[in-house]
Every structure is written in structure tokens, then in C-alpha cells.
Amino acid sequence: MSNKDIESKIAKYIDGLKYVLDQIRDKRIEKEEVRKIVDLAEKYFEDAKYYLKKGDYFTSLICVVYAEGLIDSLRFMGEIDYLWKFEVPKASGKKVVAAGTFDLIHPGHLWFLRKASEYGRLTVIVARDKTVKKIKGHPPVIPEDQRLLVVQGLKYVDEAVLGFENDDLLKIIEKLKPDILVLGPDQNFIPEEELKRKLRERGLKTEVVKLREQFNKCKFYKTSDIVREIKRKAYWS
Image (tube, rainbow, N blue to C red; front, side, top):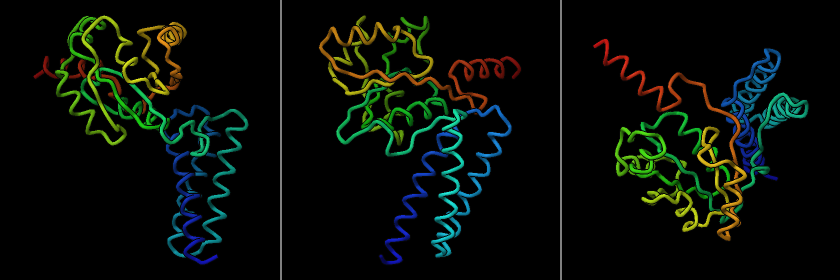
């Protein structure tokens, strides 16, 4: 095996580790001893990249293997949860759908769409203005055409469409016929089991994936928090 082949294989290994560490960074780790082990894995990850760049393939491989062992041991003990790339339930041709208002795009939206995109090719349904007003009791800040334009430009999104303007929230799902429907942790407009039942009644075999973890690693990770801050600053200006 040539040095180029060895370098390529180790680089792929390191990229797989980065995929896992990115997931762990999105989580809040309460236990100090667990954080220390994750920090150590991060250091070995950085060393692996450094030695690969230097051409020291053996040391680079040792570093990435050690980092993998550290975080896998934490998962085995139930301290953290993540998926390696080969474990992600996506396959070529899988059609994934996620939906939401996406008003005042913030890191919470980006986290949700990145998670959804891990399951396959992502189509995002952007709620219509009238739908948002009906569900939330008030219209969105940003009109639907602009919200759609912004979502279409996000890197995790393959396609974005507007929902239908009617009382049937699942009509657009029926039209798109996705393999997987990903729900955010706060999306409870229909109870999960009821949603699955209604999809089956329409002849859809769509799998429903509910994200349980909540992104909260920055101050403004909800649209409502941003709106409150704008009002607060406007009051004092």
C-alpha cells in the first residue's frame, strides 16, 4: 500500500471521528469526569490531524484510535450518546422531511436541520403565514416568501417548499411521500403516536423520528427569546 493510500485511509478515519465529536459538542455534559475524558479525546483528535499533516502516519493512527477508544467507552457506559457515520440510518435515495416556521433563523434551527439531514436527502416544509397564526396565535415576524428563501439557502437543505394553506397539516406530507419525517424536540402539534396512526391511515410508510435532545448552547436558540430581546432593547432605546 502506498503512502498516499495510507494517508487517505487515516484521513477518512479522522473525518469519521470529527463527525462523532461534532455531535458530542452539541450536547451538555454535566459530569466533570466525563467532560475531562471528552476533552482528552479532543486533544488526541487534534494530535491525529497534526501528525497526519507531518507525514507521521503511525503516530496519527495511534492518536485517532486512542480518541475513538475514549469516547466509545463513554458510550458503552451510557454517559454519552452519538452515532458513527456507518451507524446513521440513512441510505442512498432516502427522502427526509422536516417542517417548521423558521422565523428569525438562529443556531437552534441550524442544529435541527443538520440533525435531520443526517438521515438522507432533506426537504424542508416552511409553514405558511396563515398556518403559523392559527397554531401560534400570531403571525411570524418574517413573511413566508422570505422565510422560504432563507431556508433554501442553508447548506443542510436540499429542497424547501411552502406548506399548504388549509386545515390539513399532513396534506403536504401526503404529497411529498417521504421515507422519514424528522420532528424537533419542541414540535408537539400532534402527539407522536397519533401522527404515526394518521400517516398509516393515508397509506404512508413514513418513519417518524423524534429528536429528544435540545440544542441550548447559546443564549438565543429560540425565536421567542430573540423577539423578547428585541422588545427589551426597543423599550430602553
